[in-house]
Image (cartoon, rainbow, N blue to C red):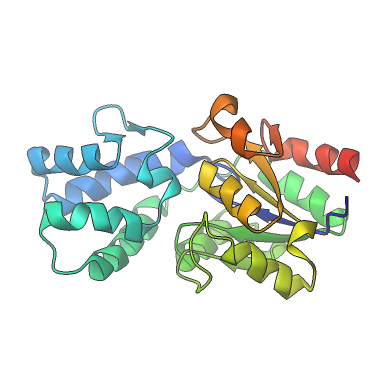
Length: 234
């Protein structure tokens, strides 16, 4: 097996999803509801988020969806005129409310540096917006390690579509099956499968081994175990 590049999901894979997003989600929901607790509860329930515990399910649209996905759910509840405008608002709110909360795992940068030393091209494919992704990667001081960063709005389609993986492979002038797609959600793994890339699941997000294993070629605890896995597969 020839692996020449690694494409990472961002949230739950490179950064701590709960620390970065849970409080921010609560603030966004309350802001959109103008602090109307009944409306806020309806918004939260619609995407599987618990306002009381600041928690959500692994299948929540907040975890694996895009702001457009969430906007489609919230638009009729909020009686907004268009989904696209609400989606743009959500991108801005997620950027604003996560700005001071972005939290990298302690192993994120050391692992990325190790993979870089292995002459592997590195990229990020997220269902967040590209602008927010670059902001987050800059905040945790790892953006320079990536030659490719794509979000749901970069023109390649969201995960589980294969577009971001194929675009990354094209940029690197390699075949998609020479790419490893690493992520903590089923959408990440399906994107890898749909592109004929190797799909590696990490359980550092909200989904566990039992949920991810049916969709993954390999399951590891977190990306710190990735270099050893790739060496074993070489």
